[in-house]
Length: 136
Image (tube, rainbow, N blue to C red; front, side, top):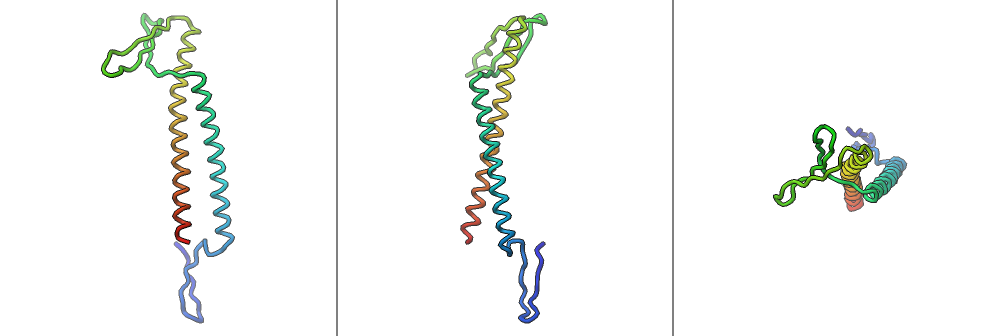
C-alpha cells in the first residue's frame, strides 16, 4: 500500500508513490527497455532455431513396430481417409533418421508456441505503455 504524508502547515494529504520521484520513473523505464531487449534476443534465437529445424526437415507421425523390429510410421487420417503407414524397416540408421525427423517435429511445435508466447508478451507491454502514455 502507498504511504500517505500530511503537510502540517496546510493539513493537506499527499499520496507518496514510487513514481513521485523522477529517478524511480527513469529506473523503471530503463528496466522495461532492458527486459524488452532481452525478449528481442530470445525471440531472434528462437526464430533462427525454428528456421534451422524447418530447413533440416521434420515429420509428424506415430510409430509402431511389427514383429518387434520393423518400424512403421503411422500418419494421422486426413479427411476421414485411412491412416497412412510408411515402412522404415529394421535398419538402425534409417530408424535413427526417422526418429530424428519426428523429434524435430515436436521441437518445431515447441518453438512455435514459445515464439507466440514472446510475441504476446511484447504486445502486452506495448499495450500497457500506450495506455500509460495516453494518461499523460
